[in-house]
Image (cartoon, rainbow over all chains, first blue to last red; front, side, top):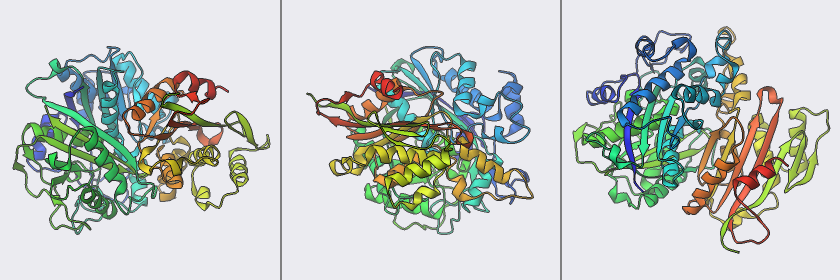
Amino acid sequence: MTIYIAGDNIISSLGFTTDENMDNVLKEITGIRETDDRQLSPEGFPLALVDSQKLSGFFKDIANPIQYTRLEQMMILSVKRAVKLSGIALQDPRTLLIISTTKGNVELLENGKKEVFPTNRVYLWGLANAIGDYFKTSVPPLVVSNACISGLLAIEIGARLIRNRQYENVVVVGGDVLTAFIVSGFQSFKSLSPLPCKPYDILRDGLSLGEACATIVLSSHKHLLNNTFTIEVAGGASSNDANHISGPSRSGDGLFYSIRNALKSANMSADDIDFICAHGTATPYNDDMESKAVNLAGLQDTPLNSLKGYFGHTLGAAGTLESIISIHSMLRNKLIKTIGFITPGVVEDINVIRETQDCKLNNCLKIASGFGGCNGAVIFSAV
Amino acid sequence: MNWQVLISGWCVIRNNKVWVNGELVFEGAESFDFTNFSKAAFKSLDQAYVKFYKMDNLSKIGFLCAEYLLKDNSIKEKYTPDKIGVILSNAASSIDTDIEHQKTIADVNNFFPSPSVFVYTLPNIVIGELCIKHKFQGENTFFIFEKFQPEFMAGYVSDLFHQDRLKACLTGWVDLSPGAEDYEAVFYLVEWDNGAGRLLFHGENLKNLYNQ
């Protein structure tokens, strides 16, 4: 069975539609900026934030903003826009909504904020029910919370649930907002860079955090395809390093297992992959580990990018957001450069894309890794 | 008997008690809170695994459930690490540790976030802990549900077996409320097997074992 991409949307620091985001990426614009919000980032680390004023402006046309948290507003707006493009119905019992997030409405734990919403909204199932109720879904949304691979894993899970005929359409929304909770945690790990991140570069010194919400519509219905969308989910897998809960594998074997199994499920070999959209957080360890896994998979010569220099690390949204950008780079036949990368600085050689360029693209490998030693890989193909 | 997805064993932890395959194997004193109970249950395993003491409460209960279930089992010898998966679920995500981390940042004049707390503010860290302890490297996913969903979990995990992604899987439910007031872990060890007398891995059986 073929799983088609039938629609999408991105809300990020670079815009509120996929096209707006894509145009900014092709113009090599970054959403990572200095911030003077010391509540959010006490030491002034640069962040990639969604424009709150614009979000409120768009949201008040579709629902009452005081009934929804900022993350819920972003998710509802993003799902609404993606579904509208696709022609599927969320109320249909053959359609499932999957929500991917790491921290959901965790800001409701802050004093003064929790009193505003029902207590169950701090739970991820409570958030999911609020979104499900808004769209009047027939089945409660499925929630995936698996650290930084959540968004990519949710796409793989969605494709799996269509392939085994539990559903005909799956809408995957990945989202996280930046809060003091998240920024302080990464800061305590000393994994934030004082400057916009530099994936795979010799001078890389940490990640930049971003916030986003990105929605992708999967369907078994070929008639939903139009001139815009001619891409399928060809395969995918997840795996674990079994090495350390907060440090990546020393050998890259975990991520390699995901890549190998994704290729196998897509009936492909490494030679079939035209480019890799990697995780590339720009922490020293993550990028080194990825270079090892990519070599283990025999993909060291395949063009590879990290999109973290455009959007920052968008956590539970990263997998869906970066997949959508990769899908549109296939549709436009553009290889996208890795902003922030100048001098190779990873332990094993990989082919990092230096300049955005035209190139016929048929198969993309998207990979991700996260805390807990988890890894994921998904392959997208031109139909 | 044909090769099918079968339940090789299960472990239930709740109310200061541990049951393996329906038999009570450990009982903590009634007065025990989660800290006392988890410590006593760990000591009773007679293991020198100091990492246990660094874990948060959610990882502790998940660790204990896996240890009691797997201690007399040889799945590690039977399968390669990439064929053994861990697919878990709960309702409260990592809320107990989320609250701990929030306390460290509530006051700007007393700001002390710690990486050893923050890392546990993700529910799938318990999967990572189990994978490290047992060298499991297959599929891993953490789902959040308001209540345990045996039908969904059985269907999802079975599909991974039928696609030849897994030969064995640790799956189930591990949930812990703020302050560990309530806790519950129910794990099933599932294998692709032709053993007679084992329970079929389907929603109804998972539900019955969960409700024991």
